[in-house]
Image 1: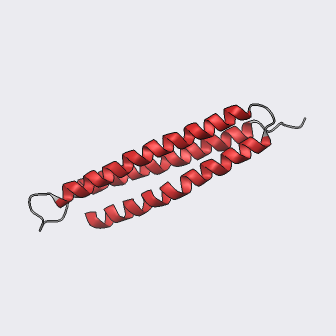
Image 2 (image 1 turned 180 degrees about the vertical axis):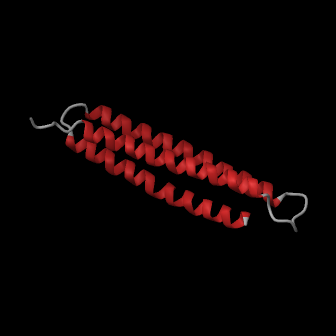
Image 3 (image 1 turned 60 degrees about the vertical axis):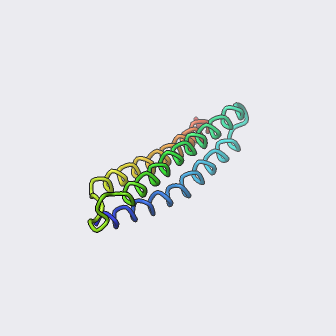
Amino acid sequence: MSDLIFTASVCLALAACAIAPIFVLINSIRAYRQTATGRGRKVLKAVLALLIWVLLSFGLFFMTFVYVYANAHRPNLNEPPALSSALTYLGLTVVYALAGFGLAYWMRRGAQADIPKLP
């Protein structure tokens, strides 16, 4: 059971790792094109969001290596890995995905905040 949860977590992490930066880039390009002033701030915000995403990615994949190493070196390899560690990794993956889509929302919110409202 824990192997299935871990495999699903890794698939979710890889999907979030691929999709969230694309959303960040699309929203930052949209924000850049929609505003005439403050473009430097938009670029800085996009670079900051991508830097945060890279740091989160390194952290999550470091935890992947820790999980795999701990399971490969457990005392009795005939027993399945502990379910609690797989659920912990699943929780980290959910936080990782939510953080990525939160960054994309942050960029989208910035793009929509600069659109002038007609009276």
